[in-house]
Length: 191
Image 1: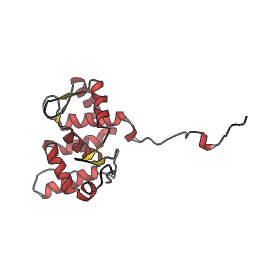
Image 2 (image 1 turned 180 degrees about the vertical axis):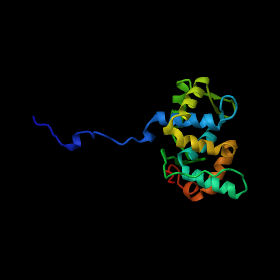
Image 3 (image 1 turned 90 degrees about the vertical axis):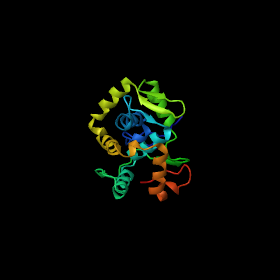
Image 4 (image 1 turned 30 degrees about the vertical axis):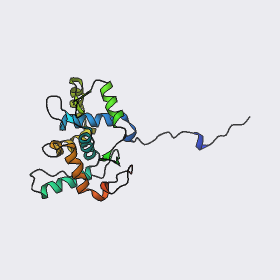
């Protein structure tokens, strides 16, 4: 009995790496976000909405640049962030409360199951780093390949990182009405 052969049956020798497919990449980015933008001894971020909106600016550096321009125009004193390229490692979708990734539960469960993040709070879900999570996050801050993410996280300290999730959501809708606010639910946000 003959077997079909051909290129369609041979897997490619090399497939381009897409960070969006790697759960570990998302986990690392969230650890950096918590370490840099969180508050208190355990680098806590209160609320899933706030976590997602800050993560939005980590994922979309062009939007972070535009927000910094807007904050300076409104009189806030800060060193404006300048995007170094059109990089968007992991796109998000428009959901009920703005930018969202439906895999957040997976990301948080991954981090929590490894003892890196603790979910705290009763009325508002908070995310804080464990002692192990802080050690791992600090190691990530030193890795050159994460430098662009660390730079973007640092650009939010003292401004966006101090806002509530609702304030961030409203600001995103105000500044990016066409790019985010006017999208249909579950549509991918384009930079």
